[in-house]
Length: 256
Image 1 (cartoon, one colour):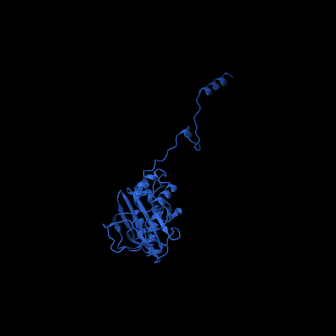
Image 2 (tube, rainbow, N blue to C red):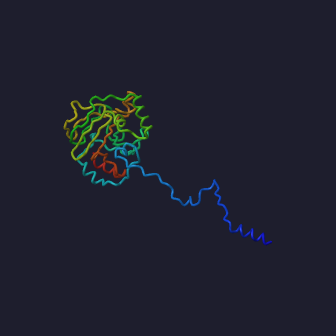
Image 3 (tube, rainbow, N blue to C red):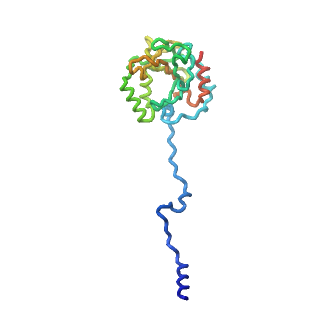
């Protein structure tokens, strides 16, 4: 009996071995803070606009301040109203090229005036200097355009070089006060228009067309429209405006 009691006492004083099941997490694992991925690097303004990331926060720009900077501009199409479908306005997604719409589209049936390929005049929105005039423009072939779009899908963004070609024949005007306007998809340019030339508001630049589009690549004149952009201090003027504020600015600025 004494031997049994002694054996029991020895067992009680001997520490038991520690076993951890390989199927269970180590002790306190649930209490450890999860490792978070590093924050993404800040994106350049152009990347945001071209579609390399989400659009920046809206309603962080004062629309009245924007209007004051741009109030010398007028519509590039005489008598035209701003086309108000979301898809015709800046910031609308362009999934086919993995990017965003940068300008204002003027289409027949939405702008209150006839818009006809090669016949509807495109006018300078304000006084300034012509800094680009595509006199030697060559239309994309169907294969070239499809290759550009395939590259956009592969990269999940619209490279600036691809976007430039998709805008077709263009004229750009640099205005006072850091304002740049761009006129895209033109059918042709006004005779004598050259880079370095000074133009006045309302001066003829060219005619509405569809250059750079899928229809133009097929040799069709369908889908004629003007794509018109306004840039302020090197960035699209609309970045930071809410959609409601954007519509207000465009109506007050460009509607007849």
